[in-house]
Image (cartoon, rainbow over all chains, first blue to last red; front, side, top):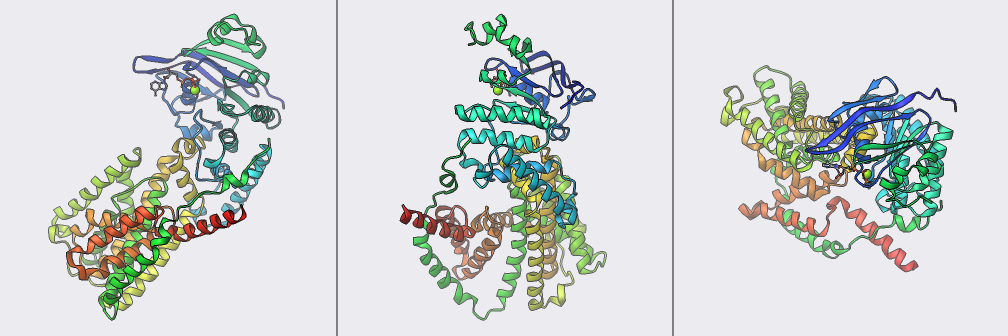
Length: 261
Length: 327
Ligand SMILES: Nc1ncnc2c1ncn2[C@@H]1O[C@H](COP(=O)(O)OP(=O)(O)OP(=O)(O)O)[C@@H](O)[C@H]1O
Ligand SMILES: [Mg+2]
């Protein structure tokens, strides 16, 4: 895919305080269109807070969030942010537990309802066509993530690793331009990690979704183009994934001085 | 990635406490109720009352889809009742127009009063509905144009007060309302509400405007409660504010819980059975409500899913027995 490499997401002086606690400190960060961008940092660095600020779950104390070069989404609500094309998963990965895998993904399709409430209620042709499209898209996602065989299993009955993958599937179903994944590999076994990383890479290369990924597992560096490292809400590193492996400061803060590999 | 144990993931264990007791429960119900039921005109009125509350209990289900519980269903019935009574007596509206307009009035008031509260969830939201239920009826009781404490009397009755025709009308009304609510629940709208109740943050991250959908649910529920209240007021010929207080709310919630909060038909089964049990045990005098309470406790203990979950429970037991045999 060809991109002009414009900036898809940019924050300027993003700051968040909880009472006296500064969790995010004047963070300038940008994610370019078409890249896989890693957001790393030790526990409590503010990575999930960053996600919540961008997606409108939390209001910034100060600073700006710009989406797609021109749109100011600093004060947008979560559902508005989602409609603009930002999909996300959650670290604790809440799901629609009583829905099956298929229903979870289907529900996520409702983001793009092209029919109005009366059309839905009256079951018009337009609505039925929409539902068919949604079912088709759901099927594609199930196939893409190799989940077809478990589509009728209730989400709450799934093992942890599959639930994480379902979170990714659901976020993918909102047809995002930017997909934000908060520790998608947590709780997965090596085989599942390998599969998920490959799937994320495919989403980026084949579907053309830009990805911002938070992860403690350093295997993500294999698929990341650029990486930002934060600690205590401050940026301590910005660069390519090859550079991050060699950066002394990152090694000191993040890996406690132990050389990575 | 290979998925192992898909079959195991899909089976769930069910309890069988209730099956042992079921025959005794049915026998008890029959012994108490049937003698009361035979050859009495008053049963027509009872069923009309039950049908009106059944519509309200199904309305409560719509609110519950989004994960809320409301103590304002009775109050919305009251809004419909007062609205229709005033339209018919003061403005000489035809009955059908009064019923529909009163229901719309109930829905509008429900949404307007819901706007400041729709931010709240679960128990906090529930408490505000309790306040709302008491307050709105208090308003009607305070003004002379709505009859004050004594309410509105001498409303021209539906179908000239013929009880038999009225029963048929209420049956038809309940069927239509419930069919509409069934459609509401079983399309994208209902699914979205169910999604919100399971995780509002995930729903929002998918672009669902939670506030809008919860207000929509409240409005639709209030509309049907309004229909039920308005129709009942016109059948009854009078409206008294105190009828629509907390006691009515508690009954509606009991119908809803006993019938089963997880099934569309729960509130319908619940209002039929609990309603009949309550009226059928009138011979017990002031002890009658206790029988309903006993039913409530038994169901809560033996059948957490409510009466409507009986077929599911039986199916689960059979499946369990089958898989045991196979093993
Ligand atoms: N609602 C809140 N109120 C007060 N403090 C908060 C709140 N949410 C987060 N914090 C604090 O903000 C800091 C950053 O938290 P955050 O969850 O963003 O870290 P993280 O980088 O995602 O860490 P982890 O890798 O453990 O997920 C932590 O010190 C946390 O205690
Ligand atoms: Mg986190």
